[in-house]
Image (cartoon, rainbow, N blue to C red):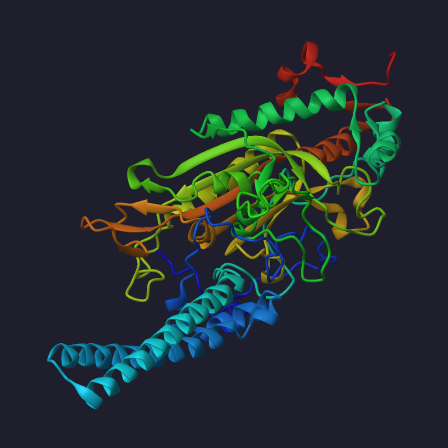
Length: 524
């Protein structure tokens, strides 16, 4: 198996042809250094790999610089420094305990008078010093954990360094089609009575929308089609909740604010009972853990296996499901965010999988390269294959991109985006816009959610007390269908300016009333 990590200099020397690209407009909801969510006592205990960080502080420093996490770039060195302090304090504490035990033995020997008083005084001082050592040890361990959790995942050797992606291929032709128009889906939707942005502006504000008539039916058809493609490959369907605890979102790499301080996640106000007036010392009055609206089903899917141990023979565990997603992302209004392209609430069909970790070397991060893909890479390739099949059958021209380090969220070690062609966006990124994404997260999320694998020989973990190695799982996620953007692409690419109709892709017709072939103005 190839090692998933390589230094920045080596990656740069391997970089392939880059694509001229407009500044990325992809959401940055998971680009934050610090979570504002308080972790309740019942939350999964995170386990950052502090040993690997201590052994490779320079690697983590360069990785932070590559990924625009400069404020955290010295965390590895600070962890190394704190660990050295901790080792020294533990030595001093051990010596103090040994001396304390020796005093106890002397006192048992029947020492009397001034000698006994002196020993008791020394024992009291040692007890105070040991309490200080224990408090300091807890504080240092907590600080090392915080510093480790602030670090983003290490980038894969496939990831280009910088801001330019690598072109991996195309779908439905190598060049953009010429549809004979540059009409926006917003205008098409209004003409065919499919979209209503004015009504949603009244009810909810900018960034919301109503789907009407055939557009609402197409949403359901797209969901059913995406599910059918994955189900025939053995994926299990599951619908997740839209509300999740803030600490679960944080463990997945999604934070309340981005690095610029912009609000990125919708927080739900906490409601809890008032303290009892009859008993002012009532300790049951506790604020409930914060809840947030999930920006993607990746969050509740990942959290569903928190504090669980997955048997290896059940892996990979692959689920897919539709959900409503909520993004409080900010952005200037204009063609870049017009219509359905960037909205605050939308339907998405998400794929998520847990896999076993690859066999490890003594360093804990990858055995000798035998050329075969790891379990997570195999699922990743399957996800990208599902995405390609869906877009191919929908008749959308698209390009496949290996995303650069600047575009990776905190949890991802590798990410592939597929961007469809939008006739109305020719002035932005040559008309291309993201419609799907797939990411390998390694054990980043599993370490923060305490999702383990039992029976994984050579996995990163420890003995479970029964002679079986128990390590952390690895996670992979991908978009099967982002409904608003795909719907917008279908309206623009399927628009016939002469007839004034939109052609419905053949694969969706079985889910449309009367196997509808085209969408026409109301009354025609």
